[in-house]
Length: 184
Image (cartoon, rainbow, N blue to C red; front, side, top):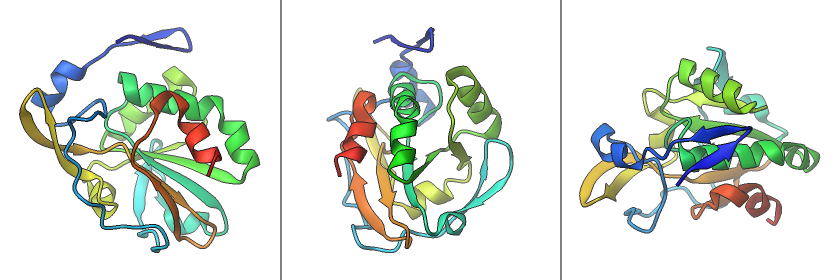
């Protein structure tokens, strides 16, 4: 599968995923364990570095609605489709009062390149120590081509103005993710 976003072709790196220990796409073959967090729970507080090395805390967003989306890998087909869809609908999301924050285990430099290449207008957090993916229960066992490994599940948490989880989207439609969020 080849994706085009802002004139860039995005390579499908699915075959390399198992070898690197992370998945690049979400699909029916992924084994999902039950989520520990549920709607109505307080979202776990976090402190992480953004693409520019600035410290970001969930408490910085108190009083605002937050879309906290977890994705497996920068600049891969599904992750790019999801991020570009959120970018293309960013003004609609903001109009509804949402702040968008993406999270992957990629580093700051990778996030900077991803943001620059696709003109992403929102913050990406570099969860290189896997603290957030573990806190939010999205670091789970996956399977690709019969090989099991740990990786980031493509889940989105909608957090209300008081810091409570309003919704959890576990079946993300990468090319139509903003519509999934806005219909809630």
